[in-house]
Image 1: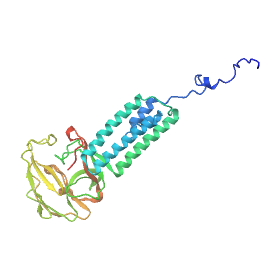
Image 2: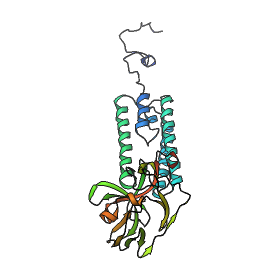
Image 3: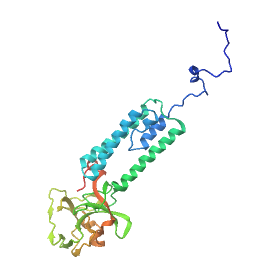
Image 4: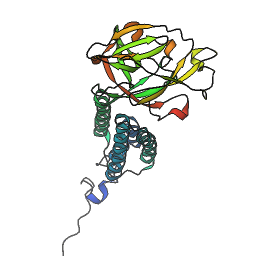
Length: 313
């Protein structure tokens, strides 16, 4: 039998009691506020805040969903497929909101706390913003419409996505480009002719390579002009160039004749769809191809909500 030894009050606590004694290594809980903020700010990398909370599997599921919807949105702009874009856009917005809510209510499971959590959150946000910058630089870019020169195709205040690149520009495409007289200014117009083509206006009729581009009066279109023009009556026409059929507005037929103009190589001739109220190649000449940022393909926001997700034709 061993002698009884009284407990030593100066000895370190046993492992069984250490977690309950302040100042003896109690684990810090990960911050749900930081995790939720990370899921919100790191959009479109939705659900990444779960990694702070130690819910890695749930975070991986949300991240996969967000990436797939983001890819669908990008493909919708580049193909272009307006329906695919709309599915990706709406799905990504819904997924982001649900992921933030899910992060806010999730229970931490281990996770990351303190300064390390802040570093992880900062790294994820930088990755998200870097990825968005790469997409904007090489795949798609957003622009807003400041004027009515492209009415009725594009309204003032419309926000559009542009498919970056210039290799497949064709007659009828709506393009965004740097203004030839000031490359810091960006314009949006429709391509009417390519390098080597001859463009002419005779009595308000458009000719490309001596062939008239016929207009069709749209009798079903209401006569009042779009509010942006501040005019009473407009005449609406339909026009087809290449694979594109689109609508035009004429307000006065005051454009007059334009003598034959041969488009230089590696250039395009552009016009606004609001033909009597557009500053375009009739005034300042063709646009060099290397000024083109890309082709406008979809509307992602408009004051007319029915236009959101619509293709640009």
